[in-house]
Image 1 (cartoon, rainbow, N blue to C red):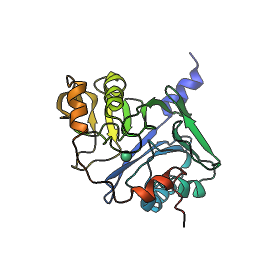
Image 2 (image 1 turned 45 degrees about the vertical axis):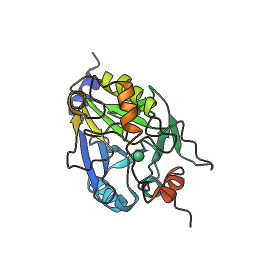
Image 3 (image 1 turned 60 degrees about the horizontal axis):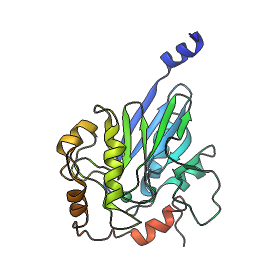
Image 4 (image 1 turned 180 degrees about the horizontal axis):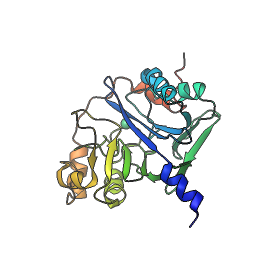
Length: 247
Ligand SMILES: [Fe+2]
């Protein structure tokens, strides 16, 4: 046994925070290694970047990776603003989301890739369906699902190359294959429930409970008749380049 390594692991302390934006109902997550001061941030919101920076500075954290689960349509990501403040940070996004400019400090990730910084380790799961380029992250008993699956709901599939059949496969064959006790942390919640578990969603998700059929799921998703997000025409082009809004 490597004693030094064991000692380091025993003394390492991971911090986890779930933050909320009440305008877009978005959750942002921070995972930090308080020994090394390295941290990662998942799905920042532009209007909440000052809050996030203040919090990271209070803990003297060095932001290494900013992860976007997908190209959001309902809010602009805080990624590029955070990258200005934290020069050691890189943007992580699914490989299917190719920006049309030469963007530095970006890492495209695909299924089974690992994002690793000191004692923080995340595994990438490609989970298309809400959008073509959606990814989820699994880390130490938690899964960050973006809009792939929400608490008792799931992301819509009617724009950004969304596809209800693909979403069914992503949830059934990737998310629901994780251990039942895995805690599920979504990108949004509209009902005041901040997290769930795989088992809970298999039991109680009205759109995609464990024995739901593909046909019924696709029928539900194709008949949601939702209005388009108000910000979609601003947010999608901005988020393809990390959240820079063109003037
Ligand atoms: Fe979304």
